[in-house]
Image (tube, rainbow over all chains, first blue to last red):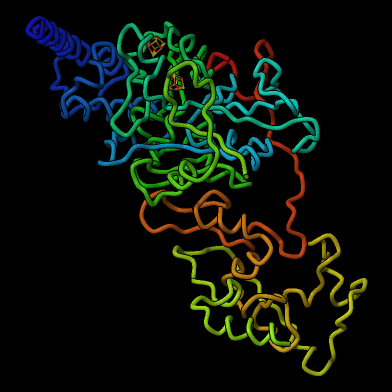
Length: 304
Length: 172
Ligand code: SF4
Ligand code: SF4
């Protein structure tokens, strides 16, 4: 099996080299800047991120940077910062504090280079009528003049980075998986766009790029991660990654930073001194749709 | 009389001081602007009005909406020490550590804040914690945060937006 795979890969690489040679007009492609054609051929034959070698990853990152430069005229930095050792990320959200301001959504869209035309928003803030927990009665298109509206309470939902992610089980090509620090990621170049995962996820956390994200050059966040906020192509799935490009460098996620009410608490579940651990140990916390068995790493709590 | 002597003696014997007397410093760093008051500029020569009243110039900018009418300037500021804060039952507290005063009433909130369930951390999720101090988010004279306009809602499926933003180029 392994042998077959590697020989297939060798064959593919040969093909790539040949195509590159033809496209580049017999010039040595190493010194020449890569053309768009060469890059798209190489991307077509690119392997799954999980099995790529260090050198392959380096090339892939450079290719992503070139593509964004070509398409948007913007210099970005695409990194693949690995998980920090002894860290498992968790999130807690205080429902007494959330006032439905949607500041988190706004910050998320601009941090994560989400498409502006199709409102691909990784956070959905549900306005829930008082006295019910029935998600069918919620409305996430609410456009109140002022929040909090006296009839509603607010329930923000994003990817819960489950320990038993239904999305990962559903993916037929292993384009999505759970990393060591608990973040569930997608290799956008390996995703075939079948959308099985978005059907499997109980939290509506996956969003599909039906079209190319309509990003203006000045809207692009140039600090990107391969598995996170690099500008996506049409036809791939995307989701919240707890701002992998920020949090793996010790920064806080954009939604936590933007929240004006302090409802959002982010941290390392393995650190007994962390605030998230304080909340899990001292507050009445619950998880959404726990009966689904996906073991989310996202808790809700109230001020009591 | 007898009982009060006994209880006074007992109090002296108590190893711990009453909760409001000593407050240990927060175990993490605090951030946010600190506004101190220039009361002294006038109130060295002008006696303050200690009674509750409608505030007139130069105090008319302060809208006191805290404690449902039960509180007054001198509930938190003391006539002999404008450089610091002091509640009726709290120790002298400097402006950088308002939680030591706030906690005399809002002890639940301050407890949550210490643990990390109220207010918020800033900078980094790891290493030494830095959190906003109480007064960074709450105006102490009117601590309730007013309602405001939410950010715009997501687009409903099937509606068209952003025609002007080079829709044709990027395929809508
Ligand atoms: S919330 Fe949905 S997308 Fe996120 S890990 Fe769980 S099943 Fe997957
Ligand atoms: S849309 Fe992509 S990530 Fe989701 S199941 Fe299909 S291939 Fe996997």
